[in-house]
Structures are given as C-alpha cells and as structure tokens.
Length: 352
Image (tube, rainbow, N blue to C red):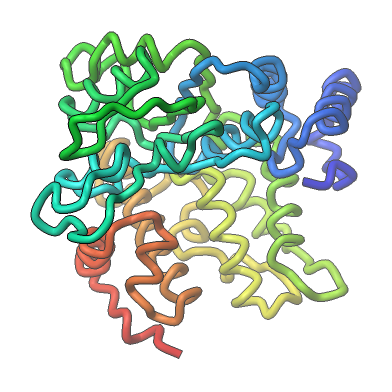
C-alpha cells in the first residue's frame, strides 16, 4: 500500500489514526495490508506485539478479508522471517490424503504412495519456520487429534512409520467458520481450539470498514494498471463501489477493479464495466426484490455470482488451463472441475 494515496474528504480519519498508521508501517512491513480503519489498526498493533513470539495464533474472518496477509505479516515481522513459510489450504486437501500431506509418509505406506522414496510433509517442510493452516475448520476430527499432538509435544509420525519426528514450527491457523458453533456441534475439538487460540485475531468484513474502499480501489488500480495516466472513475461507479455490501470482501472488490480495467481499456471505470450484479444493485439489500427473496437467499445468490466471476477470472488468467486454474485457486482439480460444471463454465472458451 502507498500511504500517500489521497483520501476523499468524506473518508478523512483522525490525525492520531494517521500517525499510528505511519508509525506501524514505518517500523513493520505492513505495506500489503491496506486501510486506516481504527479496527484494522488495532489488529496491526496486535500483530506487531505478538509477531516475534512462538504463540499460536487463530485468525477469524469471512472469505476474502485478508487472513493470509495477516499470517504473512506475523511471519515477516518475526526472528524466523528467513525460514520457511508454508501455507496449507485444509479445505482443498482430499480427505484420504490430508494426513500424508501434513505429516508425510514412508514409501509404499499405502496404495498410490511412492514405491521408491519417502514423502516429506508440510510440517517437515516448515521446520524452524511457520506453517499457516488455512480453513482449519475443515479438518476431520481424526486429523485434529494428530494436530493436537504436534502442538502438545512437537512430535508426529509420518504415515506408515513407527518412528517419531520432532518439529520446531510456529502454527498460525485461520477459518471463516463459526468456531463456537463447531464446538457446540462437537465437529471441532475443544482442546485443539484452545491450543490454537492463544492469540485470537478477528478481521472485519469490508462492509464494516467502508472508509477503506477508496484506498483499496486506488491500490488495485495501481496493482493492475500499467499505463501512465491514472484511469478516471465515474461518479456512478464510485457510488456503486462505495455502497455495495461485498459478500466476497476485499477479494471481490479486487476482481471487480481488475475486470473494470480490462473492459474500460484502462482509460476509465464506468458503471457498465463493473460486474452485472454489482452494477444493477449497488447494495446487497436491493437484490431481487421482485422475487421476494429472504436476506439469506439474497446473500447466497450474491456469493454464487462472486464465485462464478472468480472462476471466470482465473480461467482468463490461465488461458483456460484447468489444472493451472485449480492450482491458482488452491483447490484440487476434481473440486475445481465440479465448480466449473456447477456454473456451466466451459474452459475451452478461454483457451488462447
């Protein structure tokens, strides 16, 4: 983020917040975390305080709120910043391979395992560094038990091995799930939850920090636009972007700006360049009044539209290559293909 980006008069913040932001960004490397919302600045203060400790951290927040950015900031502001930072998307791992992916396996440990060499797991790859377990709420209970053992004893056994390995890894976890509900439903172990939740960080949704939208728009334009003259944004496009509820949070706004720059040829961003659902409604509360949808149905509809647009953006970026697209989305190819089928998206339409 460039903190010199001008703010609209309506988005001015108190001088104390501006000074706090400057102090935080000059002392710590928070340049990719955009915003000066007071709640966000408090989070960055917490990150600065706990980064150089070995405390486990649980990051909570909706999809697209920047949980991985916070995890990276914790790692990069620690004394182990030059050691590995390994990300694991727990939701993308096939159920029958999760244990092997996390802890590795010895050769011939199971059908499909290598016959010639052992496989190193993510915990071994992250040794002396940080492992970021994204979507931790998706881990099956039997794997939760094994993870608890790692946190308690710093030891684990690769699949098929009778020998323990010792690991020295800082664990950061994140989820968009309601952990209290999962504990109530007994789908997440209480003892593991308290091991992970030494430090809890809850990221606000974009709709709760709308004063940062203009900053984010400017940031994403700078990120994707390669021309010399900064594209103009029409008043109508600004109004839509400012008022929209963003069920997909920052990631959805980023996709909208990227799309608008492409459709506007980099010269301007008009209302018609924004995603259709966004440009038609401007706010989540206005979606499909004529269909008498409940709020939850409206939200599900908007989330589906966002997911569909994100899949299309990925295929455009990868030239229709499904395997490459799955890797970019952090999904296995089967799940990615099923998503494409769900929205009737043909990969061949994007082949260059």
